Image (tube, rainbow, N blue to C red; front, side, top):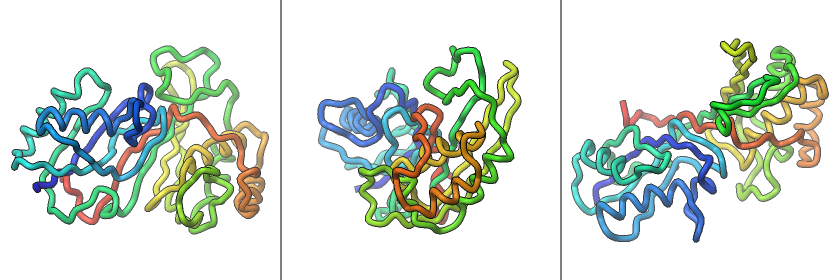
Length: 256
């Protein structure tokens, strides 16, 4: 069966996450339903990572196996046609080898988290960015983020329902960018990179670092929380809006 890699972007607000679930609206379900309109049968696609309810993607990657030998551009066009009006789009589609795997062939995942410090309510970006009202200290947050880099037991920063066999992970990048917006507010963008992540790990990082930026925590508190290996020592877990699966890295980029 010919295998295709799909690059996918979506607005996570209307969905109960990526993974198909009975009687619930999911991103995986929307794409598999679109595939079933092209080849009427049960489809099962595999993604590079599962995103939670309300989490978005600009660079999710999945693979699907088709019975027909589709020309990639025709499959791309047909899927986008049948996905309408869902807030899901296939941004690229390529033929890959039968042993290529969206999840197991991946070398890294990159997430973006958007946080805005603004007093006035958000109108146009509701559900796309996390808003706080207090001012934040970029230097303090970056110092706290630096304490998390490297290989650690991240028990403190993973959900209690995380299904990973081990809490050990290597965090390669956690860089925070500050942007002065036209509306006078300050936006902070958290760029996070690792081979793999634990459940709620990025949201746990950002929620904790926001407390550092607000002055409630210090960078030393982040170190103490990490070393405690205790979920109860984590800062508040931030909401899903603002989190984007931005990119998945492979030994060779199939979409290049």
